[in-house]
Length: 386
Image (cartoon, rainbow, N blue to C red; front, side, top):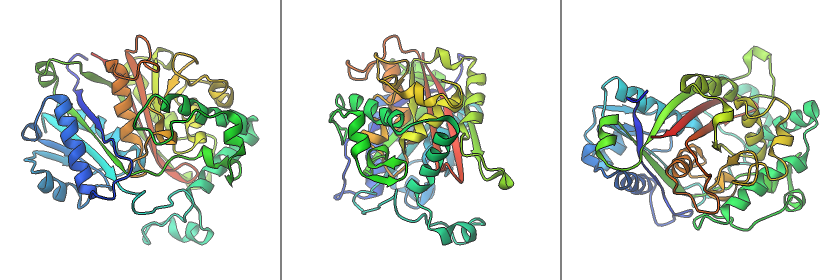
């Protein structure tokens, strides 16, 4: 286990609105920041990982960034892409395909005026599911509202319980100078915000922001030579959940499988985790994933997230101490990369003092990509301070 690749650099772009920058610029600025954080240069990079948000894919971005590569990967599984790519970078390094891997993500949905949550989901016209879904005009928020409504019906979960996910995010965001929404709110603020798709209110929904992030993963020997704290990727998992030929169950996500893989590989359990970065496209997304990862039994997520239990150094498990996609940042409408970045901050003891988790040695990173009510991917990482 001591030979595992390590995360040696991370960077979250401070902008949340970038009308003066191209998407490629945001990728480049994030890459530079992560490499500077690692103490490396672009000439050290021989592996590059990007996704559908990268203009022109790896070919164009390698040219734009002037990278000389031995390996590249353009996996696209939505918001979970960057989390999965950390694991894929580790595999590539272990196989000798590269020594230093750079992962970037960026986008400008705010500047481009994308109303991602409420607009109809538009897909490739050749996708096999399109004929069955487009006529109904499904939108992201309606998709997740179905999941929430089913969880309410099956387990008695309430809107008040969901609201606590947003309340916890606001308690954390107040300490993040770059967060979009830094005002601490109460449960009633969430419940009194407009109902967007029953039972989800406006404050149950994530932000739409411009932004970028980058991660550098390196061979252990290189990490050791840099002379600063590195983060070991101790376990990882990936899974896809879909319609299952009609056996639809909206009460769980693919995290039930990806999490099991990651915890098994790492040789730890949810009880060992001090901090968790959980993808928060909507408040229900957090609750479902916490259950599926094993932090609480299925159906008990409402009680688990309520009453401040997700607030750092107050509740049972600190979750999304940067404010998450609900209050801080959701670059490119793909929040996975910021989940890795905040987990690294916590493990390095670099989070704001008010929300730094004490004795944080293990962290869980979890992201989904796609649409939880139809088909989505899930990627899980267990990270350890070296």
